[in-house]
Image 1 (tube, rainbow, N blue to C red):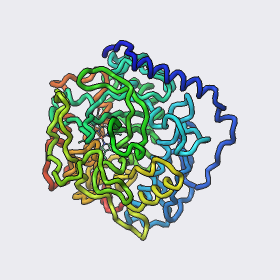
Image 2: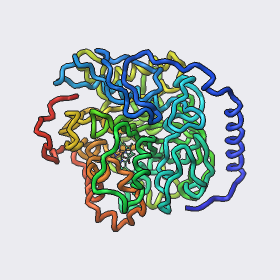
Image 3: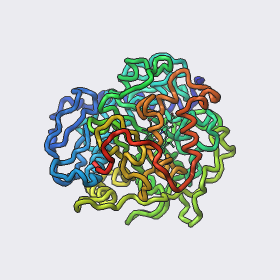
Length: 500
Ligand code: HEC
């Protein structure tokens, strides 16, 4: 960690931020206006962790109701009791994912991390709720010191940019979806992603207050304090976001963009850059899903096929038929200099069109939400749900997250990966599915890889490889067999036939 000198551009950024802060303070506070009431009957979890636990499940509508006006992350998937228990509840899970997305991209209440500003719409102004979650670098300090309180920001020495941060600021200093793992013997397995505009994609992991509080109150950010097994509290939410440098990006108006302090991977220097959101993983532990619900979103122009009405240019594909290489040709350690050319990225499995009981497929749910967002004139109309993955059956905590115990299940033919994050892991759900990879660290850290990876002191590469979980992770990433075998024996006596 090093503090970088105050360059002119950083001074400019800080001045802008200060000016923005003053303006925000002078604006009328949201507490002076009536709070909108909710009109649907879905259970909600406060984006702030109170009250906790979440409200009891009210009766759920027979078909999901598209809703872009709720700023609250649903506390759980809402499946009506009338829905056949053997049927695949994909429509309800996808609706849950969209509602979570809407709530997390909702503008945050000024100076209240993780709390939505209910006086704004989803298309309002300012930092979004997920951007105010505690970032990875704020939770895991390089010196093992305790993170600052939920609503506070740590001193500049704690982030890789040496940047002074305040409410809503974003520091992006990771070029691999595995961040530091690139230095940990994973070599080319965790390479960077180069966008068509010849820039590296940046990533950031962040945690909601419930998860953060549990980690900090138990000092789990210290490796010595990690118990042999962890169970996170329901309503724990963590996210991973992927950002593209918007320099020379095509159709920037189709992206949610914002300024961030971004590290140049080669010089290690940071500068303020306009960044656009290209991917968002959302993971929540819910009362009925102890293996968490896994949702992943992308900007619609990432890769072909072009959506109707879209310009037909892509951020990660040049539009030619040049195939995607089977493995990432680049490594994060060392990062190639000068920056190598982009490679073509494709979505190797389509987003699901499965229709169950006449309810919307994932593609149709996307269209429903995009239409509502378009009507509202919102930039979020240019985002899509790629997949929701969930454990089946729902409520047996002992079950692993392997494909046999999750949707889309063994031999999935529909998408289970985010092209900006699991770019080269799309061949088999047994190796590239969210839950099959995260279940490797189920016992140790309740599916939360970053805790296993970043608890202080971080493991030096040779020690990391002595850890069976990380050896298995490496093997998983290395495997590229298209065919899979179920790897774990059923823990529950109940067969995982039910899809809800
Ligand atoms: C091949 C393994 C692998 C796959 C597949 C994978 N992940 Fe991860 N994921 C990881 C690792 C390893 C980390 C931690 C990286 C780090 O420490 O910087 C991580 C981190 C995360 C985080 C941050 C919180 C945490 O668990 O540390 C989220 C959220 C996440 N992944 C969601 C997803 C979703 C959603 C999918 C599927 C669409 C997915 N992951 C697929 C390996 C994987």
